[in-house]
Amino acid sequence: MDERHGPNVKDAGSTPARSTKFMKSFVKVTETVYEPLWVKPDFTTYTKDFVGIRSGFQYKCDHCEKCGHKFQLGESIGLASFKGIGNKTLCDPCAKEISI
Image (cartoon, rainbow, N blue to C red):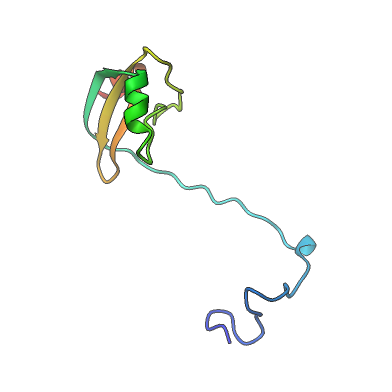
C-alpha cells in the first residue's frame, strides 16, 4: 500500500494503471531573485587557461548568469556574489548594469 495514494496505486515497477494518452502535461515555472552582495565588472578575461581551470568544476563559468550570453575567448567578464546563491559570472554590460 502506498501511504500517499492509497491501496489502489500500483508500485513504480509495475505497468501503469491508465494509458498516458488520457493524461495532460503541465508546466511549472519558478522564479529566482538574485540579490547582489557585491559586483566586480572587468573581473578577468575569458581565456583558454580560465576555461581549463573551470573544466574541473560543475559550474563552468562559460556564460552570463543574467542574460545567458556565451563568453568568447579574449572577452572581459565580471563576477558577482548573490545572497543565498554564491558567486556567478556576468558579461561586463550586465555586471555594470547591476553595480549601479
